Length: 322
Image 1 (tube, rainbow, N blue to C red):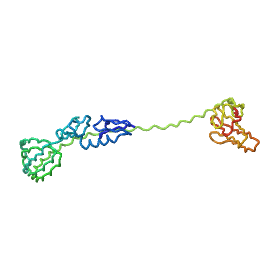
Image 2 (cartoon, rainbow, N blue to C red):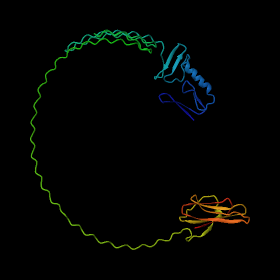
Image 3 (cartoon, helix red, strand yellow):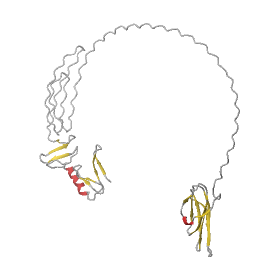
């Protein structure tokens, strides 16, 4: 039995045959069914995973998502979808987020003022693994102040979000302009006069024609020939040489036949049983009294039926009428 090894995306990594191992599909040893010495490679696989393949050189058969601890620079690397190793260690701390300026009160609706210039964006710090710094409290809403420098995205927990300042009052809405008058609807044209319907014609009643005379009866055809069957134009045939007890035969002659089989015995209880289509039809049996015995069974076998003669004694004679 071959193991089809797949990754978490359902893609085939390797096919490992029965009683074999695979050491070139991944950096772990893949073990096939019934491999006799599986203990050593299995335990080594556990060690490699615990130490993240610690070595000063990268492993030769990496797969996407695999980690490698480089012992030469003490950094952890990730094998990415670009099929290359990327360091995920030693990132700088996240810088603080600058305070947000407050928003002034909303005036009455009128012409829109010019948009103020956007403050310069701070430099982005290096990405690190450390925890994200706490978020400072949010100031009152007002004009937009300059944006603080953006810290690098950390892998640690996100700091708490500051309190949202109150929203400024909304200015009053200007008056809605008056709706103009609706135009008048044009006149509908008059409908023309419908013409009168003509009178319906009378229904006719034609007479039914007379029934034609019955044709004369045809002459009677000649009678078919008399078919053959068991005892009809048949002959008894000795087929002992081609027959045996406890063997199933089939009547394929196209009509019924008669079958007779007999046995003799000088000790015990001789018997003959006749079966047609698996059903016991005739049975001859004689209790031996010391003088010997000869007897048999006769059955009619329909066309297409199977027939069998059974006896634990020797076949003396077998005849068939067809």
